[in-house]
Image (cartoon, rainbow, N blue to C red; front, top):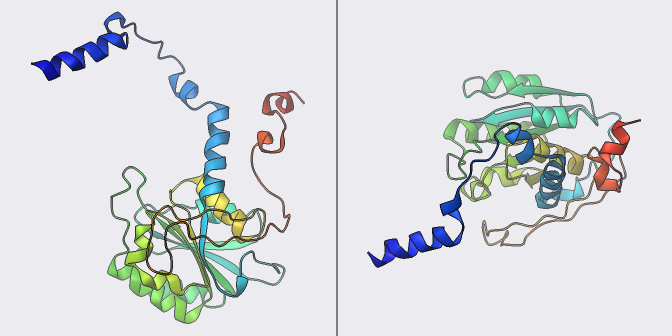
Length: 239
């Protein structure tokens, strides 16, 4: 068959006829070396997109007297956002599990600001990224009670299917459920870095592709890798 022959010729041309196995010792470390980690963090920093920023609430200016709470919801809940926010403010965190809405709402009632993190599965971008009805009702009730900053660690199309989210004081599209994405979002919220990302897709008339609201860098302490400021991690490790 001519098609099979073409495939075999391509493989031969690529040198696959002279296959030799690679050493698998330390392969995980080789594939995830330090330079790759630095690059991945920089990608998250550049990608994080502010899509709503009412009254320029971001970045938060006065933190001294603000009681800030983090609420985690979604199918892959974790404490990444709360841990990142804790670099800048004393925060409590609570998990919404679907059956404890009244309990969580009571606990956050006296908070000046609630940061909601919506976490989904990273293994496939098309797995469930749309809020279920329990999550939507919880967000609606929370918005009636508190000021909310919403961080969306999921496919951006989820914003289009859940307009309730856009009623928040601010919304950050963070794309992936990772600690690097959470740290980028937290640093934008608290003014340790500016937001410069834009949407790669259109999620409505008011939020077309390339929509993104820039925010200010207040020069608060930024967390990252030495290479981001022109230093060498290997040299620093010797000190």
